[in-house]
Structure formats: C-alpha cells, structure tokens
Amino acid sequence: MSCPIQCPPGADPYDGATGNPNRQGGTTLIASRYDLVVIGGGTAGLVSAAGAASLGARVALVERDKLGGDCLHTGCVPTKTLVKSARVASLIDHSEEYGIKTSGYEVNFPAIMDRMVRIVRSAGEHDDPDRIRGLGVDVFLDEARFTSPDEVAVDGRRLTTRNAIIATGSHSTAPPITGLEDIGYLTHVEALRLRRLPRSIVVVGSGPIGCEFAQIFARFGSDVVLISSSPLPLPKEDVEVGEVLKQVLVSDGVTFHGGYKVEEARTEGDEKVLIARNERGETVEARGEEILIAAGRAPTAESLSLENAGVELEKKGLKVDEKLCTTAPNIYAAGDITGKYLFTHVAEYQARAALRNALFPIKTKADHRVVPWTTFTDPEVARVGLTEEQARREHDGQVRVFRQPFSGVDRAVVDGETEGFVKIVTGKRGRILGGHIIGPDAGNLIHEIVLAMQKNIPIGTLSTTIHVYPTLAQANQRTADNYYREKLFTDRNRKILKGFFGLRRRLSRR
Image 1 (tube, one colour):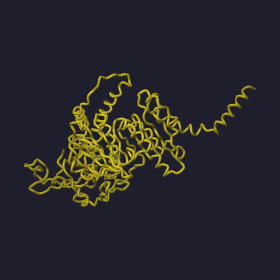
Image 2 (cartoon, helix red, strand yellow; image 1 turned 90 degrees about the vertical axis):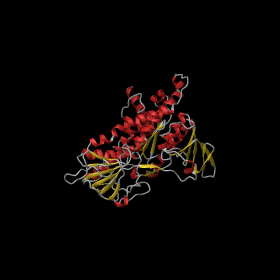
Image 3 (cartoon, helix red, strand yellow; image 1 turned 90 degrees about the horizontal axis):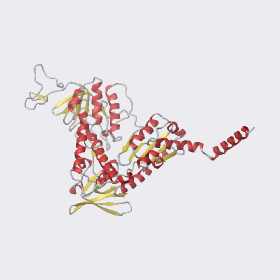
Image 4 (spheres, one colour; image 1 turned 180 degrees about the vertical axis):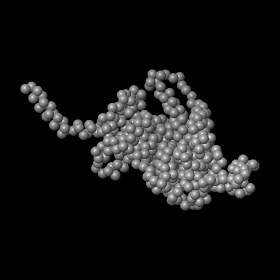
C-alpha cells in the first residue's frame, strides 16, 4: 500500500518507535485528500471501497476489527454451516423413511464448530486486507472518528475526503429483563463460540436468528424452549407461514411459548430461569443451562463522533434520504446502519447506490420496492413484497391469492419434503404484489417471483413459461396455474363452451 501521508521533502513518514505512519516530530500529519473514505469493513464497506477504487478514485477503508463484518464472522456464513450440520442430523434421524437403516450416530459438537471455523476462514480469504490493498484501497485497521464533515481521524492520522460512506452495521441488543445482566446470557455472537453443546437452552425472540438457532440446537440434541412476544414465530411473515413454521419447530422438539413477554431472570442451582407473562396475566417458567437473546438490534455508531460531521442518528439507524445521503450532504450510508432491511444482500445493493451518489454529480434513488429475504430454517422461509393482510389493506377489493402446497409437486414428493406451500398475492390484471414460500429450497425458488415483480411480469406469464419436470420450481408454475383456473374454469365459461362444443358436433354430422 502506498503511504497516504503527505510528508515534507526528505522526511520519513514512519515513526521508528511504532512502525505506523502516524506522526513526524510529534505532530499529527494530514493525509492526502481522498475522493472517498469508507468507514466499516463489512459487506457494504467492502463493496463501496472496492467499487470506488476500480473506478479510479482514491479510497480509504477504515475498519476497527476484522474485514468481512458480521455476515462473515458472526452471521450468515457461520450460522449456515450449523444449519447444514443440523439438517444432516435430521436426515439421519429420518433415514429409515428413505430405506436406509442406521445403527445410531453421535453429534460431535466440537467437530461441528471446527468445521464452521474452517469455512469462515476459507470464505474470509476474499476479504483479506492485503487483497483489498491490492485493489488500490488504503486500508486502516483502527477506530474512525469524524472531526468535521470532510475529515476523519484514525489512530492519530487525519484523512481528508470529499465524500464518505458510513457502513458500520448493527449489533445485538437485549430487552429490559429484570436480573438478566446478573445471570448472564448469550447473543448469536457468543453462541457461535461455544465448544460444548448446552444440555438445555432458552431462546428469547422468534425472528430469523431465534428460529434458526432454536432448530439448530434442538436437532443437535439440546432441550430447547423458544419464547416469543408474538403468537407465532417470524411475526413479520404471512400468518400462514408462521403457522406452518410453528408446527415444524414443535415437531423438531422445540417447546414454543407464543405471546409471552419475559419479565424476570434468575438462577436456581445450575439452571437459569426466565419468567414470562402473556396479556391475560398467565405466566410460564422456562429453565435452561444457557439463555440466548435474539430479540433486537441497534445501529453501531457510538464511537464515530457523528455530531462533528452533522450526521443525525435515529433509533433504528442514520437518518438518510432516498439517495442514502445522511443529514451531511457529502456523507452517505449503506447497510444495517441505515436501519432499512438488515440483510447482507441489501447492504450490497445499497453500497452500489451510495457509491454512485457519492462519486458522481447525478444522483439516483435507492429502490427498495422489491426486496426479498430468506430465513434458513428447515424448511426455508422466503418472502418478497406484501403479505396478504398488507395487500388487502392497501389494495382494497382488488387482491387475489393463489396457493400451491408442496404435497402437490412431484419433486417434493419424491424428495420426501412436502411440508409448506407457495403463496402469491396479486392485484389488478394479475400484477404480483407479494410472494411467500415455506418449503424446500425456498430461498432459491423465490427469485422467479422477485424477477417477475421487478419487471412487472404478471402471474399469468409464470404459468405459461415452461418449467423443467420434475423440479421444485414447478411449485411456482402450479401456483400461477391457479390464476388461469380461476379465470377460465367458471360455471359461465363452462356453459358457453359446452354449447360451443355441442354445436360443433351437430355441424360435423351434416
């Protein structure tokens, strides 16, 4: 990496005592002016920095921990390795259904965690600091702090910049529960560092993180209790989806308490105890060796000195406009820190949009109209657009809903994975307003519906498009087939066509 410090002629930019390009003669040196300084080395930050450098801009990337962010180290990558191991364990449990008799097996939890570490390390090679420097990005592994809208302090250095992108992400938070801090608890971060499988665990929160971990630990053999303030798991999803997922979790051995808010925590012997109450005043007591809190996230911005830059922070994230510009006109934001759709794929999309707006005079709006996401339980839950309830509220009298259970899809029957369904919500003239899938490979299947929504392709086109047989993708086609069945196979049309065929037969006899 070339030295970003502007040094007087003949001066050595490196302090011999520290080996860092921080100071010369005890005076803080001012870096050359950057076109862009990116703060945060997760998905959004890496995409922004690498994209800007590839366009020829001078870029600095500042990250206080490790490049790769939450997704690589404590999110998507490690959790999905556990999801896979848990699925293998479940398949072994049900192997006799496929004609395979097993003599038993053992869950080697340390080996599972070792595999997770190896996969994270392998995936992280793409985010190695030296690789990013090789792309033309000046990488600083330290805290960043704004001193003004166009200057960022990093370990004694001051990086001046025309524009900045904040991509510092979010972190887990815990609800206010009396005694919780005293007894101690895990978040998903600590859960990924475990080396011994808990005998029992109580999971608080039934969003994606809570549901995934509840199923993972249950399939590994832990006794699992899942406490949810909402009546069903995944409260943001369509109600029908939540109902099926609840049945799935219970069948995996998870004890589910829906509609309960945890109020108190204490210890009894070697167990941690949570007391939760519902709206009727009824209480439940859940006991476990460990407590996993999966009930909230907050923007990570506490050390940035945003007030020096004129950047306003709200409860869910930075205040940004449709162009992802913060309240400082030269500072943009991308990823979880915006408080909009906390997903890695959205962070990547926002990074590209923020990058364009930060570097070029013509600004474009970020388009969040069609944002898909997936919860990686087994079966997976995928969603894009409006739920049925939302659609009926926003498109009164114009909503039609079409469903196809996987039990009616030959490939799902062959695979023995018939739980769940595809549900497509439509408006006028078959315009797709939302798609919901709970079933095998839902995270991949949803993209056909995503593309249709993005390009305004009506549901009827999904029906008339040839799909390979036998594949799970036919579930989408079968769902769309119901659109034509409803339009064509009516009593009125049947009477008209019956008359037409009768007339044609009489004429053919003449």
